[in-house]
Image 1 (cartoon, rainbow, N blue to C red):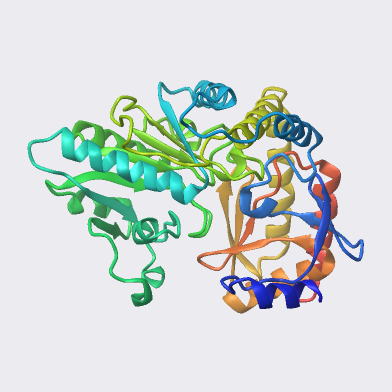
Image 2 (cartoon, rainbow, N blue to C red):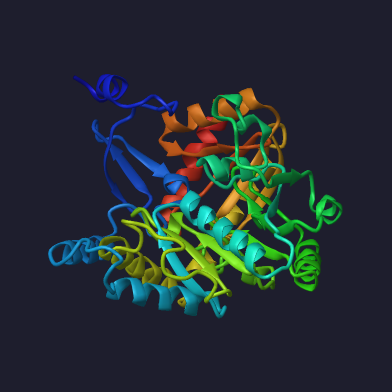
Length: 394
């Protein structure tokens, strides 16, 4: 029985899969069961930040599982405490951390913190959370409602939790705020929504207004966090002070993890929130190693060089194919090319796969690039060489 037959017989069909069978990887290069190699410009949708088969991470995981994999949060967990320290130090903010298993869980935790803040800090209960059109915050029943895409609010899963609304743009948020609004939740670069960064001054103005009106700012950095945009947090690039930040994806390097950071370190008390697997020995030891690798990559100047090199190649591709692409968007190694139409976008992705390079799609007909942060110049060169061949067939 081949992998496609197995999958279709035993796995719930919630994904439109490509049935290639990848069996090994080396940094930004993947190999299938026929030993064909592919340059990976996707990193598992921004997850494998330090590349496939990273020996340092593998060694840390093997060492940890040979000792303790899991005990539960009823006891102190040393790598969890060390990881929290590392994340807070890298963030540059005075915050505390809670660990879960995914970005959706992190966003659920952020919403719970906001709801308790609204319940305990005001005479009148505040519970409403405002998000933005084209946003994506997860697929749980709450985070999918927080997501600003009506197409995701299917009647199949109704009724949804109350207290969520989304606006078309930041300017509309000011008029939507009422005396029950407790938080505004945004992505600084809308990943699923088309790799669209917001204007820095616009974000700073909003952050200042929210602070003056005692409304929490939640920044979803599930995709931007972990040096993806060039700094550990995009919030630092935007020079703002969020009340709550969520992380996941690249900070785990492929091991499931979610992180909630907040300045309100004493708001939640024992019993308010929890997770069976969140922050266990395995995930936090792996994430700590990932953070150390990425910190060194940044401090050595290698990450900045890689971003510049990749951006130069992407700009050249954009300039050479103005008949296909209409705009170049994004920050750091979170980049996108707007494509003329959805059919062309799908053809590019299919042709690229055949040529041996993996790319993604995002909203607004965007060809999305999320390569491992450790990708080499040789891998970048080969990936763009193959991408150019794919475009010749459009």
